[in-house]
Image (cartoon, rainbow, N blue to C red; front, top):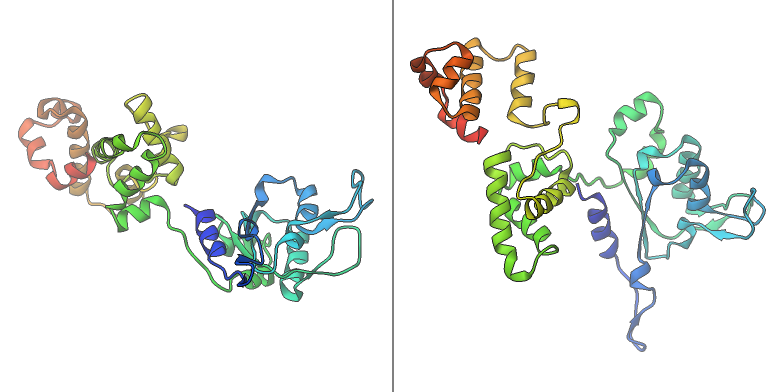
Length: 296
């Protein structure tokens, strides 16, 4: 959903002091944003990565090490991705650092200052994690000073359908020559609308859109992955299934929808009638033109 891009935009827009005489920033712009993916690190290494360690603190600690937090400059930002994966013990230690603006390396008692800014992100439901006891409530209230929600790709396209071409064009610009971007963008956008539909859930978000563009360039086709034959979240099939299981669709609506669905696949009144056990006239009367366009 672009969590790191949003965090980077926030971090890189921070104030950096500028020295007028030397005409340069007093801190390195390149060091003003640092990203750390918590889920990518082994739990036993995470504390050392965040807080650093003293020589001899544990087996293999042959020298002192500056952690990510200590190394963050005064006007810098450290981005902690997948904060929901953080172990409870380290949650307590990071909570104290955010509260006191001080930290201690692993294996030493000396307090060191932390002057930077922390931005964190997660794709977990933290309310559920707090209720389950895996995420501390007091830690959450140290992090939630300002909350930014990054919508999933499907939600973004539902709100602003025109963004489809913009995002495809952005991807295409990195894959093909400049004079081919417009043609590729049109080709992919047409495929998405006709074959996937604007209701497609894009479970892989922007990374899936990138692979869609790549597949169409290489193979001329894109087939979304269906894990275990599962229905695509947000798709018409998924919505119909939920309505059916919840008992929120009438028999007439169900027959209309299913008839339209089968007709979209067969493109034949006769074949649709044969599959459903209906005569041709009934099939024609049951097809919903507006729904048919959405299926396409």
